[in-house]
Image (tube, rainbow, N blue to C red; front, side):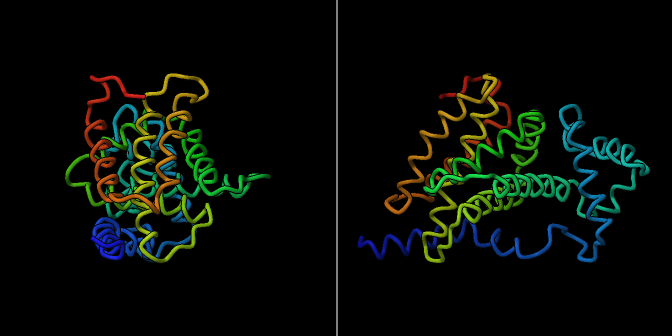
Length: 253
């Protein structure tokens, strides 16, 4: 197989993984409503923020959102008015808010590294350090997304995160590398998230070391022969471990 044929095959495989997610991102986060006011958007964000403290106990559930609604001065069922798409829409906004927070913190830094792989590293670590205070919510979120009926949502949210990281890092590619970069980073990010959940150090030292080893893959993106396989393997790892394997088997550093 020639290089051109290989690139064509990779492009096709990666488009099947990410194209739907990419174009869905052009629409607002809301699944059902395109007429949100500024106050509606603020209340949606408040509800998700309030829910984070309850997710470790009740998961992403109606009970959690009812408690969050009460904290926001709403009736226990009124959260439905702000999330007509149900819990899927709530979890999607949770991920989008985390992406936005990560990117905002990155742009507020006084100094950012020049090499692209260090920019990517900085962004991922910002995301993980921001999540340290609610790691159990992250774990419950992975469990929610690991359910078969949420596979499309999981792919969309993973794509959104890695796309936000690459764009913040200054990526402007439009050829097949657009997909190879995102597919490879998806595997790196997914594996690092699992390392984060298993990290028992106070400063996430194990996670940082794990990420540094995995980022060597990102530096080889243009040379990789099977980025689609790397992505699928990484996503499969997230699904299997999020459904309980991590609790029964030590994480491999």
